[in-house]
Length: 472
Image (cartoon, rainbow, N blue to C red; front, side):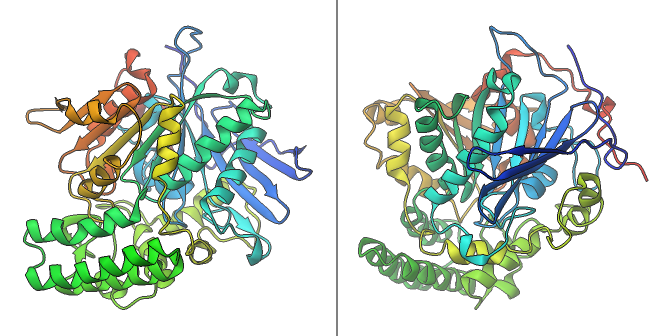
């Protein structure tokens, strides 16, 4: 199987290209001399600049009967960086110590990371007022980005694109999918659309917050008093959502997290077996209690700047070696510097459900995969199952009635369950929290192979032979 030779991160030959955009702006791109990596900025709107980074898989084939897929990874938040967190913390070729990741999703697909929406990661706005205020606005910007990247590259046009999202990224994914399909239909976007995968995704905030108390009571993390207090705030949130007071619902969501934290001795919202602060990829309890939503999430982002275990500091990495390697980040742009503002501007859409959009995609015949970590709280499996049952899709009754099949991966014991009917697929991933690729990398890799249909390829486990490295 053909493999590319990857240049080292700090010794790359950069080629800078400035291209006119369809909306009258400019795009700037650079990459490695061997073409294995490309990255750049697209001015998606005046004064709004979105950063992307594309990796060509060393296992990519050019078989017209089995076209090699591309995964667009969308991080959550709002305000978390796909280029940083999704790439170096979860599924990219290197971890944040710049060591090869054996479970990289490049074994199954090319990877396209985007700092979405503008203001996230390396993406930036020149004026605060141009930050997006809704998921639809984010989808429009992302569609502009896809038009710029795919319409100019005939090779990429032959590969099916799969949108894989995590957390709040699921709301971006469903709105983007509908926007991209419309652009394809209108012949503005030259793209084969493969499907979407929603990982622990914030599709129905009301169903998730309603699940927190009962779930944590069942696993002995809160008591009856905590359940009563949390359920009281859940009813308030439901009423606020029903009345269209979504910003108020976001504020009450913050109060609910405080109540849960107080009654659970600061449970980790991303893994209920832990306290906040025990896992560096999650939150720090003392900092989150009594914080406003903006401060709460900015501190959550800060907690993500240290990788799990003994990995390196991702904040230093992104603002140091990676910034130097990329060579096109403006001097006044700091990775993650506008993340808090991104959350603040989306506060009015944060609690808005996107179940209807999932229904639309299913009815259009789009392949929709849902996967959830067993130990997650914030986007719990209990909450995910609740919103799935609200779908109006004609195949739902049959989907709910069929049996699950067990999953095995890398040793003895059940690792999860799955079931599918027509174009809806669900994976229950055991012993995983919010960050499934981190907690269950073997299951996640096999799962993504089935989602993208790249499981037909037999890939040897030799990624360490590739030149994914950094030189001093």
